[in-house]
Image 1 (tube, one colour):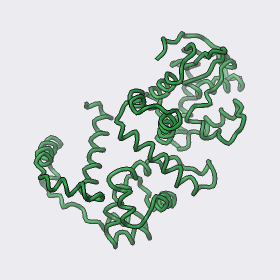
Image 2 (cartoon, one colour):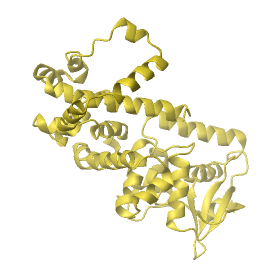
Image 3 (spheres, helix red, strand yellow):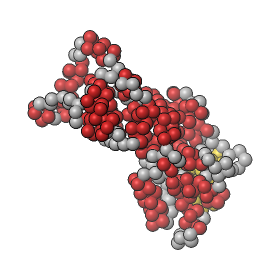
Length: 334
């Protein structure tokens, strides 16, 4: 990271918005020479879900009500004295719009932390800290797109990427693989960028887990079939992708799935018979018993799991791992 930036009050019209911002880059690729107005529109359009749109409205209302921003934007002053907004493009856009609309207040100048001649890796670090592990997260698709750019276009090593954004290499690789699968197989199914539903991305993340791809192959399906199922809502609840291996193993369930969708198919798949005692056990009791059980699994059983890529037990354990990991991370239990 470079030396700490200097807090300055900058003329909003003197700052160039960041064309490398992953939230808007996808929307500008078809525009040869994007104007500031194009970038503004792309920033507004990046809220592709109702939740993201609501966040944008909340940010706009908050800035207007408070008469300014609390968190300064981050700007890089390049060698040719050009000011580029590395972080805070939406806030900069809102200031300009408020000034244009003559909203009451002081919108001609914006607080900014100004860095001198910041290198690309430092800019990546700032974006990642703000939007992948910070308080203003990008949607999962935008995160995955940025990770793909860092790894496959910028050429950053895995050590660099893990150092920048934290997490496990395996999980980050799954995000990149999910992004590439969605781009290759799902995007061709839609007519335009406006019809490309980024909220379906988590289904492609689930595709990377628990032997799902192997289950598709064993049942003579491919990722193109999976993308079609996602588009047509055969798999409406995206977490149900985890059920694909056991559904595709069951001839009757697979037939129902292809006709009526995953929700109906899951009802036909055998589920473990959980006793009343197990249901009534608390988290501490379950953790102790599960730990003892897993620590004493015979080698022969472990080997059978490795040899069966579509093992229902392995799929259930991977799902449990994700649930426990999310519970620990989201509640700061570690």
